[in-house]
Length: 372
Ligand SMILES: C[S@@+](CC[C@H](N)C(=O)[O-])C[C@H]1O[C@@H](n2cnc3c(N)ncnc32)[C@H](O)[C@@H]1O
Ligand code: SF4
Image (cartoon, rainbow, N blue to C red; front, side):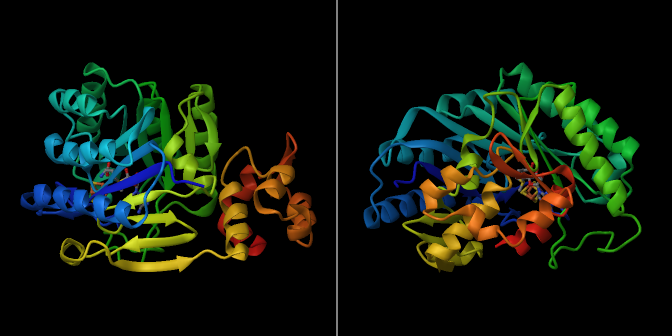
């Protein structure tokens, strides 16, 4: 199957947030033009090695903060993609930005490049929570950014939140949700705060400042309920959309399809191999075709990825489709675990497909590790 999606990583940020473990760097602004030119070279050389036959259906400029750099530099990359492999007329083209970086002028430049979907990190609309995770905006600045996007004509807007934050309560979370939903976004992503070993958050993992499991579960419940009340349908564990506004790019990941990727630390899945570019900025600039990691996906791994990713989607896993796609009988494959999951209310059948229940989603990592 030819890859029809591309992820482009733009690593520049105005500030490095305490909670962020992405390849995202502050203080390297002077390198952005040289970087974009390197990405253009990478695109050319990778496509020379592995030609892609059909135009892209989705492109995701992620980061880092692609909205932070000069749109003319982004245009160097986008022009290359239009030239090869080509961009479909109706492609979904997303750009990630912070609220502060977004200006009406930039929005018009993004539109003229071909960007038609803006994804903005809001995280919380409580000043104390934003401060506790080292974000460089407050709630007013965040809401002003959404208003500027709207005033500039952005209709397809996706807003990101994080819950499970230090000091967060059910009341403060619901207040954040109410304020955010009042902007009537087309898409909301809300992830539980993930703390990896390398992060230096003000409150260390395990601190009493973080919500306990019960509160975390209540936060997830109100997220789903409030999104539903505002016409945002849950289509993935952490993603909600107005009908027709699901992220086509992210659906490609969850459907276990292949995709191209370019830029520092970018992960791709191509010709049966999952690989990632070098994560160090300087090393990537010198050696943009080298891998930080690479793994060939054998049939066994393909099937377990199919189960793991498919169960993230609320449409779940349909055994007939699964058989057609992977040549494997899903029921045979998970026969020894399935009754326990269903009996304990962790998984359910819905419209002929197997999916996790809300209770199951809260321990999805454990369930998926058991299943695959
Ligand atoms: C990597 S950022 C890129 C967009 C932009 N730089 C921003 O911060 O708004 C995309 C989103 O990832 C999420 N994110 C980053 N680190 C996270 C963490 N440790 N736990 C949960 N979500 C996280 C945040 O919601 C953030 O908005
Ligand atoms: S969360 Fe966004 S703005 Fe903050 S460091 Fe990460 S990529 Fe940059």
